[in-house]
Image (cartoon, rainbow, N blue to C red; front, side, top):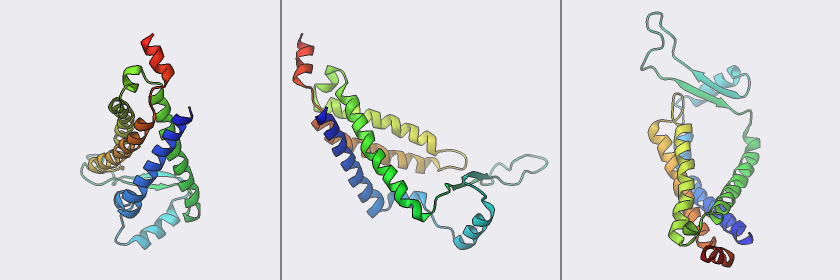
Length: 188
């Protein structure tokens, strides 16, 4: 079990390095998630005065009497979490905990897989990567839609997450191996 936890924690370190380089240094997610508005100060002032409490607000075009919602007019989403910049540390801490626990859980799942999965490095890596693929596909579904990300951005963010899972899987598949007990059980 110690080896599984170590594998998961090292996988989490790999995730952290990936996010620091790709998101922190290269600004990948920031480029998608934090675009700037031309008149940001006045929009900010309006939102402060009109968004009463935390929540997700969807702003639709005005309904026309003859045809309902105009088909090609944009729909906007405004999300307010109730947090300010002083709360950023809390968000980072939660993200780090998830970043460490998710690979530990994945490593545990791999360690409890069948003997054919555990038998080779490649099969362990593929098994772990499929777990990441499932999460990535759900990520596309969660991110894409009306007043959310465009399909291209939703897919890009999910591919980003999948690559992170595969990189963590490289370490986890290397460390999570069948034990002597597993070998004896499959032989007997």
